[in-house]
Image (cartoon, rainbow over all chains, first blue to last red; front, top):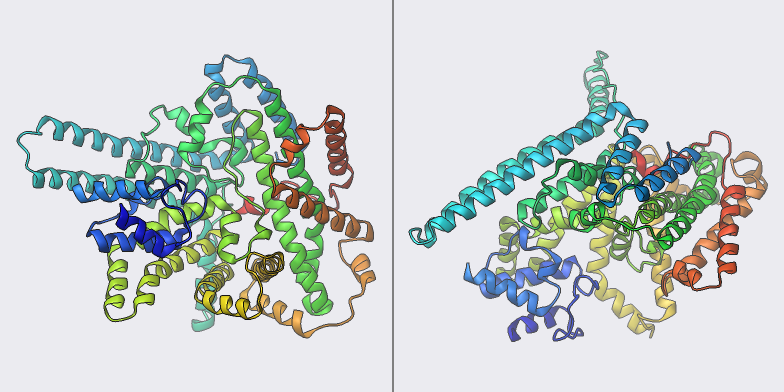
Length: 75
Length: 531
């Protein structure tokens, strides 16, 4: 989880990732940021994120991103 | 039966009365009957296209979901005997079948759309080049078909649903007639918004109790939409067309004014139409997705496209941009660039390549002629430049000691974005890219004296109309300034009832008296209705 927050801070350092639960809905992350994040996550965790994972619910908070990474690591 | 006609007002009134009289479990049936009647009344022959889309999407969704159910049952029944690899292989096989069903249906539906939208322009290009290169005058005849009402909107909405079913995002709608209502819900069939199944369908099928607040709120929104459409958009249309058809005669100043007016016209026309659609839906207790969020206050082109025609932008983002951006080949290319020391470029490539596709397709969605593709490419170039030059822009702002979040910088950025987007619309109001470039050049080279009398006398905008248009644009601007701090309707409803009546009466009178019903008036001609 800490590493994910680190990656998120590299994209938007000013955001409070511990409490923010609407990264996409509140437009803190735009599509540029999401694609950058996905690239970083795939490199870092050696997982495959595909089109069907690209829904706001998977990227709205650090914990949602963590859950996505975990589920993909288990596959 | 246009949105801006007495016939439509009567139709909606009758449907609302029936909707709230019938038992709640039949309300969705009333909406379906009304939607099919509306579509059939508008263009009976085009019903065939919407039926093909409805049936093919329904069948495809069933095939995809049944394949998933069979897979789950098989994996459950054989949980103890199957290895991890066996399960993976079985899942991959199921996915392959599902993908085949999906692709066939996408090809059928987008194929119909492409054929109806691009066949004639393709024939025109073939004929032109045959004549130019071979002197061949044996022209291929054009196909005799008009673009069916709302086909771009309902095709995108329905195919979006199918892709979501393929991704397993929703369970499919099993009732064919309920699904048909999702495809054809009449307030949004003409020009959107392009709704998502999860947002719209549950609202369409759930029982609704009569609530005066919904009727009142919807009515205000309809009146505001009519104000934007009839008082602003239709009034300015004549001026814009006249100037653009005689650019050299009028010169730069008139063209610049036409560029400004066209931005107001298309915003009034499109967002006005959406307001009417949303207002009508609201009267049935249904909230449509918002399609506009004060786009002219945007501080960059990227932001503008998040606030203008929002549902089309999110459709392209979710179903084209994201799938392409996680495409293995594109990601590999980005990785290779990063490994060769191009760290920044390597990160941007998985964004810029999909974005290029999105903008070409967005251009094509707006029209079949080459000028729309050029328009899309210009948008793309401006967005890429805006991103690449962010650092330079920040340095300049820093040196000038200006605050990025200050009113001055915000106003400057909104002003710049508004005019960039307005100039790009020259591709929309001219027949060819070269006409658009010529108009742009004239703005900066032909500065003859602006003769206001010429506007009154020779253009379709007499003095009174000019004043009404200017006043209406100011009202629109003030309204949107207030709207930034919250819903204007909520503010009105918090006022004493007498004030509410005064405001509604003023709006009603404004639309009735100042609505533009000039010669050649055709309120059915919503610009986006033709897409």
